[in-house]
Image 1 (cartoon, rainbow, N blue to C red):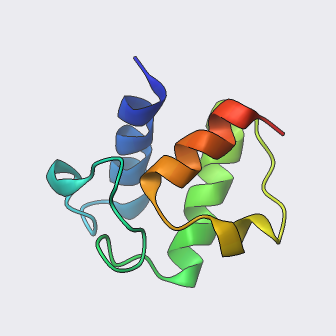
Image 2 (spheres, rainbow, N blue to C red):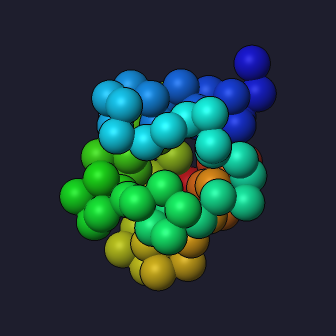
Length: 78
């Protein structure tokens, strides 16, 4: 399973149906397309940290706008 597929599973788990995962793609914008709120982004970051072992820093959230940005963070590590 690749990173994108695992992320889609995490979206489904964290948002419990609040995000239509059938519409999630690498270009999906977290706020505009998926409707994520700040608290949702925090829960997602915690799930990603646990699943992939990466750490998010406060300044990361200003840079992460799309699913692809999350993938790049995961693949870039720390």
